[in-house]
Image (cartoon, rainbow, N blue to C red; front, side, top):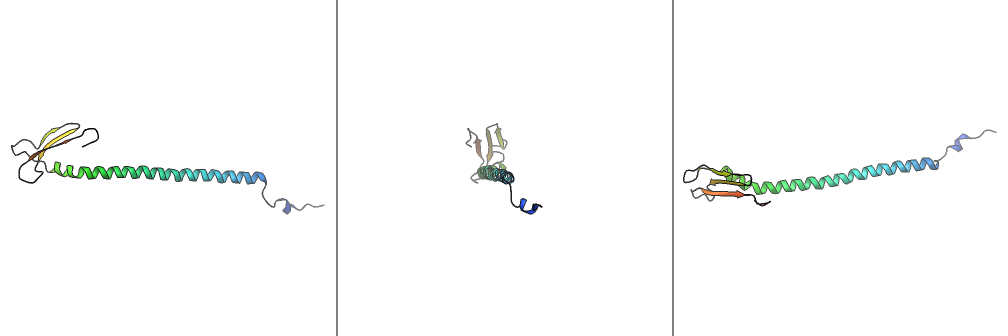
Length: 111
């Protein structure tokens, strides 16, 4: 009696099915971790860009005032004092021809 081998290999064994399901879930875990990291880093980068943009908006007028620094109306140097948290200089802020003393001081996180 000859056995028909084609009927023997039709379908999956339980072990093959379990291995396929395990591989599928492993791939899904890796993909979901990757997608989660993408969303996390998007939030981090977006927050950093927002902070950078806010700092740029705050420092833009300060930069233009510092660039317009000039000797005082009494003849002293344009920059009077610089410290780690304080910067004092002379500039014609209100464009009246007279140089005013301008002081920027950092107190905590407030300029």
